[in-house]
Image 1 (cartoon, rainbow, N blue to C red):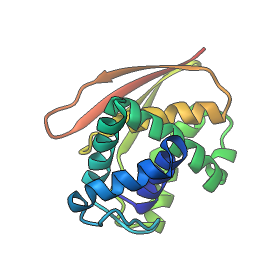
Image 2: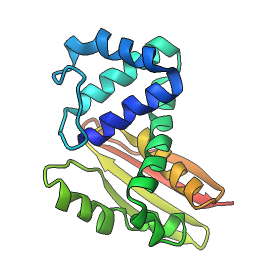
Image 3: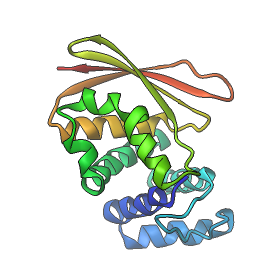
Length: 182
């Protein structure tokens, strides 16, 4: 997993819970993190380090892990819309953006980071106001994807409803997000 994800997770923790919480989180879990909790935006790190940090944060805050991961997705969407604004500016709305994830955005990510391990997204248009976005990954980050979807809709100032259907197997997470504009 690319370091920008870890750097932004730390930023979110700092903004939401304070510097002391971030310091405690990293110090208390340093022995469980092969990186020691030091991340650079261009580095590559084991995704399990993020899982360790999220679980530890959940234990400290009593906020469920899925809620924290989804909240982090919202944070990342905001960051991505600023740092990678051209991807957002070239689309008119949430649906047009989501349709471009695999065939455009991830292609560009691979050019910059050939070793990136990205989830796969496919879509099915149901009608003018509804679509299915299918998330597939060996990692369990569908809640992160949900936050990113909500954050994208927020960027485009669209009111959406998301329904999730988990059709995962033991080794492969697959979630169908049915997204409807209201």
